[in-house]
Amino acid sequence: MFFLYYHTIIFKVMSIYKANHKNILLAADEIKRGGLVGFPTETVYGLGADGMNSTAVAKIFETKNRPTFNPLILHINSVEQLDNIAQINSPKTNVLINNFWPGPLTLVLKKKECVPDIVTAGNDTVAVRMPANNTALELIYRAGTPIAAPSANVFGKLSPTTAFHVEEQLGNKIDVILDGGKCKVGVESTILKISENEVILLRPGGLSIEKIETALNEKVIRENISEEIISPGLLKSHYAPEIPIRFIDDINLDDYTNQNVGALLFDRNSYNFDFKEIKYLSKNGQLREAAANLFVYLHEFENANLDLIVCEKINPEGLGNAIMDRLKKAVNKYS
Ligand code: AMP
Ligand code: MG
Image 1 (cartoon, rainbow, N blue to C red):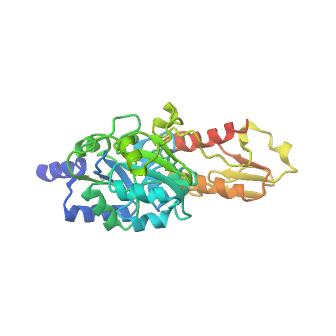
Image 2 (cartoon, protein in one colour):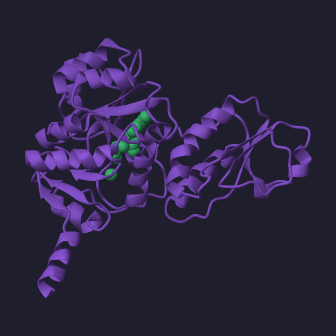
Image 3 (cartoon, helix red, strand yellow):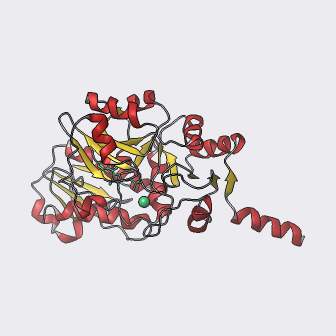
C-alpha cells in the first residue's frame, strides 16, 4: 500500500523522460493533443505547443504565468514547413537559411494566414527558427506541426538549460519534459527582421552578427536596438486596432447611441444598448479560450465598419492578467 502510494507520488512529481525515440513519440502525441512539452534546443529548453492551435498556445502563457502576450517563435524542422507559414520576401532569407539553419538564428518574416494571431501577438509578421538539436527536430517532425515555444521558465526566472531546470520550475504544471542533456549554446537565438530592402537586428544572441554580415556581404542595421527591444517580450510596436477602443466602465454608453459600436464582452451581455456587433471572448467563461480569441476578434472588429469598440475589464488573475495588459495598451492608444 505504502509502496503504491510512494510510487504514485514519484510518478506525479517527475515529468522528465529521456529523449529517446519512444519518448519523443509520446511527447509528439502530447503536442498533437493540444498539450505542452518541455524540450531541448541548442539555445535553451523550450515550452512547446502546437503552433497552429491557439488554445494550446494560450496554455503556454498561462503556464509561464506571463503578465503579457509576447510573440512566440515557431520552431520548424524543414524549409518546406517554412513555406506554409511565412513568405520568403527576399533572396537574403535564402542565404541566411542556407548558411545558418539549423542553428540559433530566428527570422522574422511576413506571416501567412494560417498562423494564429496569438502566436504573433497580433503582428503580421512571424518569428521562425530551425533548431540545431536532433530531439527538437524529431519532435517537430513527429508532431507534424510547427511548435511554438518560448523558454521553459516561469516569467521572471532564469532560462533553463537542462531538463532539471525545467522540472524545478514547471514540473508540476506539465506532464512531459524531454531530457536531451545540457544545451550547447545556452543563450537565446539571434533575431533578425528581414524586409525587402534591409536586415535589422532585433536581438543579439547565439549567432554572431559578424558571421551574419559575412554571409550576406552587407551590414546589418543595429541602430534600432534599444533596451526595449532587447528585453524579450517588450516589442516597440504592439498591435492595437485601427478603430478607437475604450473600456465600457470608463465611458457613458448613452453618449454613443447614434454610433456603430462593437462590444468585446467576456461571456454575456448585461448592457442595455443597441450594439452593432457583439463578440464573446468565451461563452463558457474560460480564460484560455478568451486568450485564444482576443487578437482574432480585435482584427475582425477592424473590418466591421465600426466607430468604436468597447470592451469589458477582465479579472486580472492568471491569463486574465495578460488579456488585461493587451486591452489596456490598446485603450491607452486612444485616451
Ligand atoms: P524568445 O524570448 O526566445 O522566446 O523569443 C521571443 C522573442 O522574439 C519575442 O519576445 C520578440 O522579441 C521576438 N519576436 C517574436 N516574434 C516577433 C515578431 N513577429 N516581430 C518582432 N519580434 C518578434
Ligand atoms: Mg525567455
